[in-house]
Length: 494
Image 1: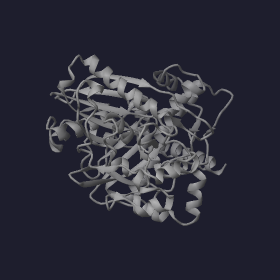
Image 2: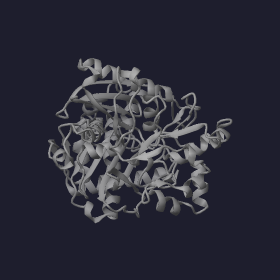
Image 3: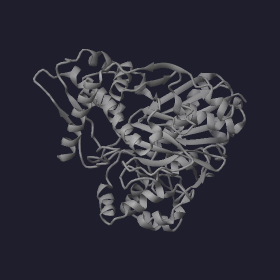
Image 4: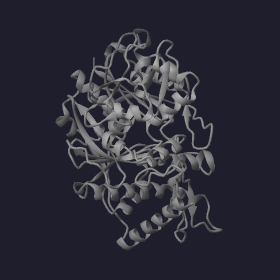
């Protein structure tokens, strides 16, 4: 057995990647699936699509590699976090579409809980804020709005899970209802200090604890696949939410190490070690990973729209056909124009946490066109990242000297990464392996199986592809960032 199968179930597509014994990708398969927007601010997935694309991409990756399933040691899973699935234990069918992490339908509920003075309790227990982003209020909405759901939940007929739990349930034929600590920590139902589901939070949101999965370490025995899926039973030995898996894949194992992943959204995680640091600047306190029963904590800044802003240029405005076109467009933009795009399509995440504001564009002239919009779109990701790092520096002085390790699809853009370095005034390190999310899941499973090296040796395999260094003078940097801050203030004021 010389291979690990990594499942990377994302927001817009599902991928399966086979890694060899040297932790190098051997083959992969990827499938997109439909996004559903039933109302403004609502985002849903068909839960069946998440499972169907998982099964088909796994088979596709195995077929492309030309190996027998007997050569696969184990499976590692990483997934879009916070997305909420509620299903029938007997039939295995979801009782409603999955409510996606971007969904904002529970904004009013969160506001009412804040007004009741409950946010400090939420933060103290879970490390999170009262925001529609997290799973807990989504689950309450399902129980309150799907006919018969609450009665069935109280009767023990339903199961809740984030996407990892849903995938594992299907892989194991309903034998395993489990999750890992990193996904549990994103539900707003998990006590990150005590390491268990919180009765306080379940009572606050009126959620029966019988719905909840068993919580395990990131590297643990999560069950085995049905034999009929891939020709034999394969153990599932690693699970982590996508941003935590990227943190592992980037080998950010020491306090002070920082990674930022640029996918649909952007998520920066700063390893703070053994102690959960409670943010004074509306960042999240979360679990970076948990091994051998011991959690390692992180501060996290979450940006809802990063790569999704490029998808908007393509699918919404239709000014590009492919994401690769944004870089030459941005290069051709009129430098005399300073167009600022605040991509608050589903509200703003950290450090603002405003679910109600919406996107805005400032500085348009008669000469503004696709090039200026493409430039503003790419720059918005850099500006938002600086917002996160400013907050991290204020919360944890050890972050000041941290180099930023980047990954995710958008990190392949030299233009975007150079602007990121310019606006941060700091170096940005891009690794040779950009598939760090899948690599993190693969390593968790592989080291549990004894195929891959231990943490210290794995960290030594991290390899730099390129460092981007600032090429913008300080006065320009300060002026550009000040303009961004004014644009955000104006957006929040509407």
